[in-house]
Image 1 (cartoon, rainbow, N blue to C red):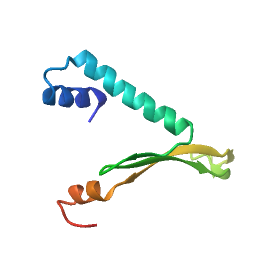
Image 2: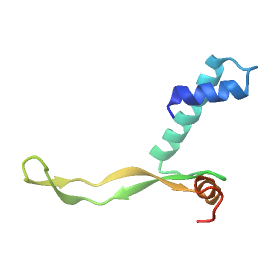
Image 3: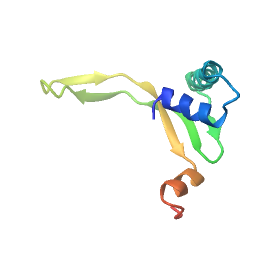
Length: 96
């Protein structure tokens, strides 16, 4: 599902709201989530899951094209953990 597909789905459920307003709402939600992760805050959406930023340590990697060793610096990466309800719905209601 793309962002435009999400906007279309929300517009179908809320016909009284214009697509332009829905687009602004969706964009605001994503911007807020991005800002929270950039601040290393945790985002928890009950029944869906949680997002957090995790730090990866520096390591030695390898260039797959040349085979040469490369130093990879430490960095922060987004991480998503699915909630119990989402896992169960994906697995057709079967508990994980």
